[in-house]
Length: 394
Image 1 (cartoon, one colour):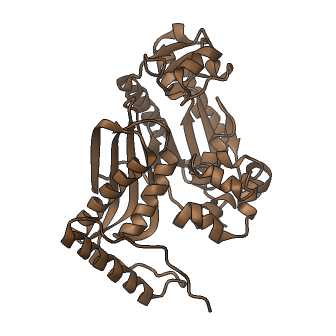
Image 2 (spheres, rainbow, N blue to C red; image 1 turned 45 degrees about the vertical axis):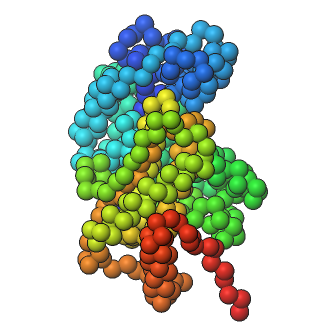
Image 3 (cartoon, rainbow, N blue to C red; image 1 turned 120 degrees about the vertical axis):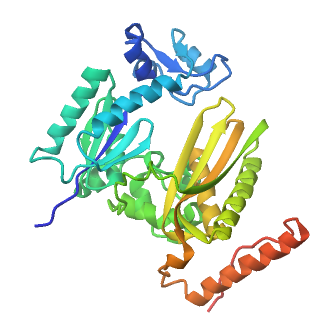
């Protein structure tokens, strides 16, 4: 008999604000935000009392104070958040070794073999009650047969929600949600999808012109289409956060970068350095990550894993652009970073070629990339760049 996977996604609610009120009980049940002292700054997060007034994360602080004059604002306190994050993950490890931290305040658990005959809902309720009673940390939990659905489920009811999302429920529960709610879709991509008439996740799932989607989503298109139909093959990976084998480059901008085009150009240069280091070491990467630190010194990062390993600049930079699109916020940038991990020696790799991408074409692509790079290196300036491939008409 086939054993179906049971994946939990556990998300701490309004985490920074929850840590503050857990530490100082006088902050409970009052509108609370975390952010800069300067009213021209941006709120990092707001508790649910503040959200009742329309206050939300990433909102200008002066607007938040206009909506909620009694809002109390505290500065960020990372040592405190790290302490409570430690409590959170130490507790989750008591349930299973198959734990993958996704960030400081959320993680995936593969509970398939660790339920001990209990119903997943009962286990989730016990987790939620313990974290609230012991540490005063409210959590929402999504339960599903894969990571994507579990993440979407945990977002459906906050705070203190528990939601089960089965594949058979996707059309009824997932598809009616606005396209903005699709996990992984960047803020800058949403308006482009809406130009195609895509308003809901269901519209996206039923959209029949894949080429138009690829214009905005690149090589992540098929992954998104699979996911909105309830299919996600990615495994809960306990080693992901513990693996230090990576190649990365970052750059701090003392004067800050204000323009989006400047930021993307900087990412392009960083990606080029990372790819050079990969090639010098005869390595290829499966996971690409982008880091950004804004002028308020808040750090954010995103990562994406290929189905294969790559050291191709154009493949990797396409992912870097897409990840940055998801991270992009209209703030000045203090630091940008690009890193490659899940590395393997090229001699040990075999990339399964797509049936629509014959080997001869791959060889030509690689040869063209090397020629362009050689010419540009010779003249020490980017004289040549790739254009858009023009498909031959039959």
